[in-house]
Picture 1 (cartoon, each protein chain N blue to C red):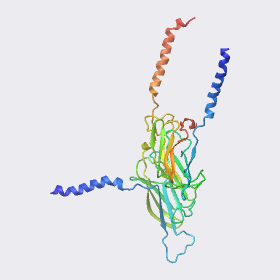
Picture 2: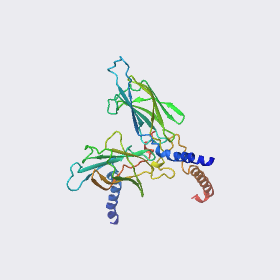
Picture 3: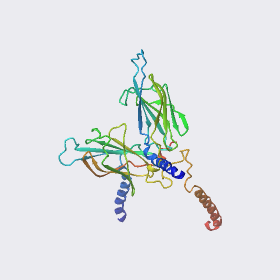
Length: 214
Length: 160
């Protein structure tokens, strides 16, 4: 009887575990959230925006593990991304962290030279999965509470190789990557062959010295 | 006599060998092709669509993460209005290298209307082809090959 009572919760739990990866929608490419300024009685701030919007995403999508990428933050003075941008000073009073698993890193953003309202921070994701960006602070007087942006999932490169990779790629110089410990193919064998060849030449030359004399 | 007969063909052959690398132009960066709707144009439907395809990062280097960029225009050149978001809904796009093919899935760009992107990491040096087929806004696109800019080794770009 006791075991029968356990069957339904166990089946339900297993079903949830199996279904959850499909039901849980992965983070979208770029996410925009709007923050409203809370009005204070008797306070009139005509030059301040009533709403600011912050849009965040990866520069290169899909983000691939081990590839240098960037977090892009766009700041707008309005409710959507057609509103005027807030250039250069938009993140002066903001703290922006990136989070993966239990680890957090504070990001330093630079305003884009080309796109007003865009701020970028370089980041190389070294794990597969979902990273979160958490923002908090104030933008032009609008209070931004701690807000989480789930980033588009970081993927493995395997599915993007074409033709499918088999061993080393010809013409791919891996010596300068620093992180790659690839050993040149036949490296030790080539050295051994070279040493044997030199020894053979010396021996043969020594034995045929008389023969080669004219 | 025999020697003089050989001189002209030898000079010609040498000249051809020397000139060929300069005459045969490698695949260009982005290639635009225009497709016409046969017969009378239907109101509201484009009579021509153009598809421009190229690598996202050029020159494409072997082993580097790259992507195929595809632009769709409602007209005969890339100054025509773009066909955004739904342009590839009825299209099949494949990439080919040697005897191998792979179907590509494109995402519409967030920033540029009419642009569609897909990530790919070329693992071999040489020319890849992108082949498109289907319909765009009612215009039939027959199987059409776009030779992509040649994938190069990284060696020549290392400095020092």
